[in-house]
Length: 244
Length: 243
Image 1 (cartoon, helix red, strand yellow):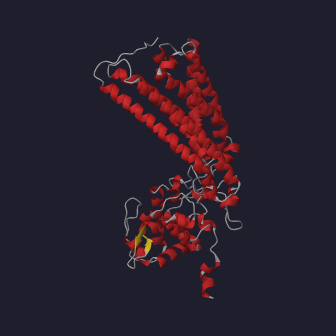
Image 2 (image 1 turned 90 degrees about the vertical axis):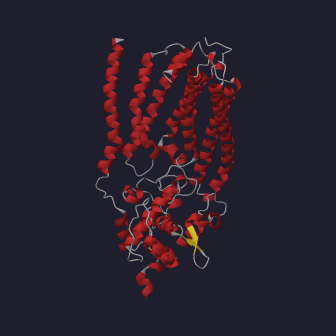
């Protein structure tokens, strides 16, 4: 991200100091975060409290990173309209901030009472792993790929755009769906209803999840097809719109 | 820029110290806190269950009595995956066969991904003690020492509940229920979305469907979960049966 964003936009990061702060902030607070997966478990409470503290602190470091990237974008936001790799990077960055913001709340012992062991956590993991790191990798690959094969642009603008929108809408819809499902399951369990109720109540959410899952797979197939076509296209592809 | 470089040097040193501090908090300190709890092997667990006459031991005896042919095969069965390499000559329900069944069952619980949908941890919140605990019988909330043994490595606490928690399962259903449930979950739990596991079953010489060796071992393992907290019910106590 720190490499590709300046390379794609051909300008330096807004603030070097802020990027240092972000890096060391994350390096400081991330190592203690592991135990936040085991709150209310038979792990000593000091480890659990330290994980809660460190995870909330991570949100501040991530916010400093996001401010830096948003200020770098300032004045160049028009590029997001036609530059799909850049759009992947910034979508991922915004999803990263949403995930960490959510995390700062649900890492507390109060939220954990309800959401631990539910689909809420699954939705959260999807948004960070696919929505952030997945989209970043896709953006980087799409920037590098045509250059590897001596082409100026990807084979099809339509495939490129279609893949982006299917993946972006798909993963965000899945995040919303699973978050809601997690709340339903969590409160249903607290209410001591028969176990089978929580399965039945979850089914509409799981069907919706299947639909958006198919959307995302379709998007990835379009993305892969575009890569294949770009690599095997005979003539050199030229960009209609030159980057600034 | 010189100022910034000094700042980054301070940050580097502080970062390394903080990393070590995090390591200390997250695993070194818990290790010191828990070091006095001995880690039990499967053989220790089996010996303890036999000595205390727990429900896990009586359920294993029941399985051996219900399915004698499968039990004979269990003695001869070897499998590198679960570390069951020994053929047991003295083929009856004893500490050795019990430990072997627990070992195989535990490994197939992992292999079949049971932990994808079933957790093994009761938390002290969200009415979980009411849902999963047995009042007056079970020490309901999970505590560190019950996880200090070979059958809890790797940790099977789980991350997602689609089915209910299983760490107090010995107090919930009997072994007959589990045989039917493992073969066809919908037969005992209508509406369940758990798949059946017919490959843990085989046809015996009379054409009846009975658990195979892995099935018997898996059932032994599941009936072991939480058995250390459950008092054996009256009919299975030997002194009551003799009168």
